[in-house]
Length: 52
Image 1 (cartoon, helix red, strand yellow):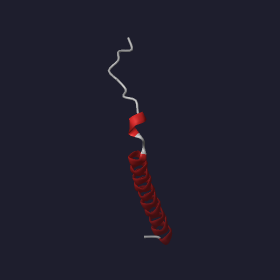
Image 2: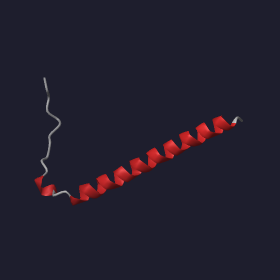
Image 3: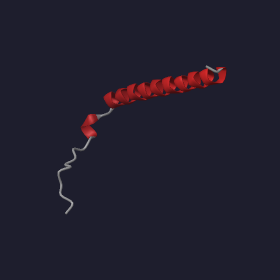
């Protein structure tokens, strides 16, 4: 395999790993923020309304 191809594959793998790590990080942050929300102020939505 040419050296440039190996470098490109390594770069693509690093980008994929970085993206997965950011998604996991943002998911954990979202879960933490959801636990801190004052749920008594949330409204209950009824999505079963007909728009016709």
